[in-house]
Length: 281
Image 1 (cartoon, rainbow, N blue to C red):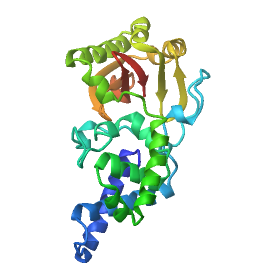
Image 2 (image 1 turned 90 degrees about the horizontal axis):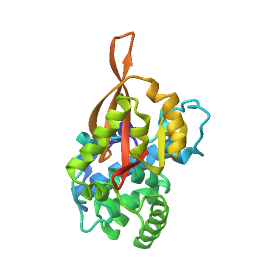
Image 3 (image 1 turned 60 degrees about the vertical axis):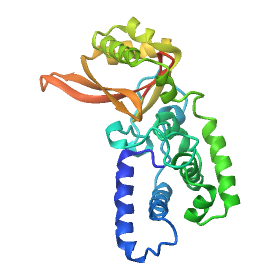
Image 4 (image 1 turned 135 degrees about the vertical axis):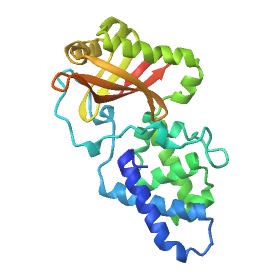
């Protein structure tokens, strides 16, 4: 709902506090699960109303090659979420959800789902990720079933326009574990050795490279190569593989001469298309 690990933590604490305070008044007219989701949904909707729409740089404006630009305030940006903290299952919790829970945390989906208004966003997630029925969502959101179905239809259209045809989960299932490790290893080796040709060779022709909170982003091998040659490849790097948003990611540590050590600097979340990297965020 919120596109932010920090906002999600705040929302969880607020929802649990409201549930604890209201537990004595829970009358059992719905399941405890539905009651908790109602509280959590209302907390999220209130936070959405108070805050800016979160996005990725690709949604912010056209790509450029005029330097990195001025970083924008962090609350504008979707934040990566560590897989170790997600706790999602391979399948949705309810009957035949449209989106598997692991797909619903991928960067492209999280970015796309920020576009529908709050109520429609909640309806989409409750129906098609969590797996509630239209009747259950109507009760939870104090709406009618036709209103829920209408909101769902509109939210689906907005999201489907923005998500790729193949999820990252489907793409990774088409690759062997060995091939996936090779891609990540080749990426980190090319960065550490400042091997521009090797790095560009790992990318799709129309790849994008973005760096929130900097709004500037680059598309295409030529633009990305020019940026890398003048920027990141001038730095000494060491890397550690990890996972974020259900996607292969790399923790990037830049050499700090003052500390005489490598210092945590960037998290690169990799989006694959086939066995090439289509996006680095």
